[in-house]
Image 1: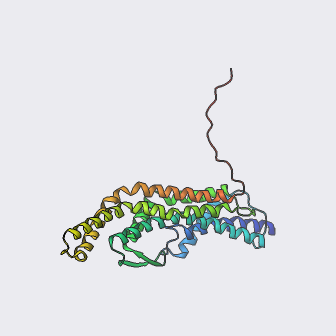
Image 2: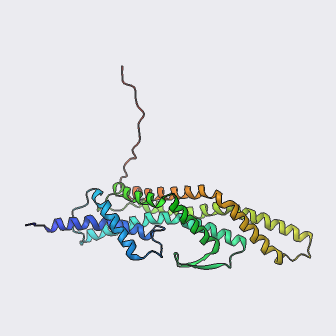
Image 3: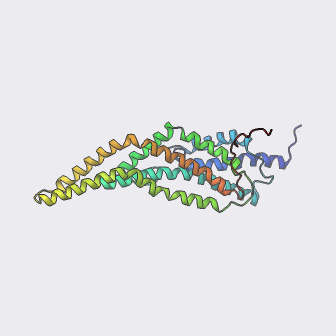
Length: 277
């Protein structure tokens, strides 16, 4: 007859619930996984499947009741870790969408705004186009698989424990959040520069020929130059977007390292030394 103690049952439950909470936190916040178009049942099923794969490889977890106050605090901590890692990758997509917003406003498409189901807000047409392009690039380079690999590594970098969460992790996330504006402006800089030159040329043309109707010819010209510049720039945006994906994944990996009170030193390969004598 198989006899199980309450401690063994709690250990089995905690061994699945705590990793599942971190995984579901990342799925809820990360791009592509947390898309509003994906049904909740699919997200939960994916999280349970990943937890069943990752849970056996997780280091030793604390021997405590998951329904106690200490167990609930660990549950909240795991949820925050997963959400922070997913949000670090979400910042990359926010930077790309911000580049589309800046380009759209510079082109004169500020009125072309539609509802975005992902952000539950309004988004410009160029921003939605950039979001679709970045999503396709995210899948093409298998960044979603690398993100899941970083999640599995986080259980070794920051094991499940009752140790308080270090305050360096939120600071790392805030610092990474500032990347939205700098990366967005860098991506939209070619379009903004081309439209700035166009507006200067239109101003000189209006000054030379005051009888021209600048409001009649200005909008079609800026719109055409904007679309032409966007079509010329798109083939060269692959490398910057890929670099942003790498930086976002590294930022997600840095959050568990910063959250640990004592982060382990990264392993390095030492150069071979000649034998003495």
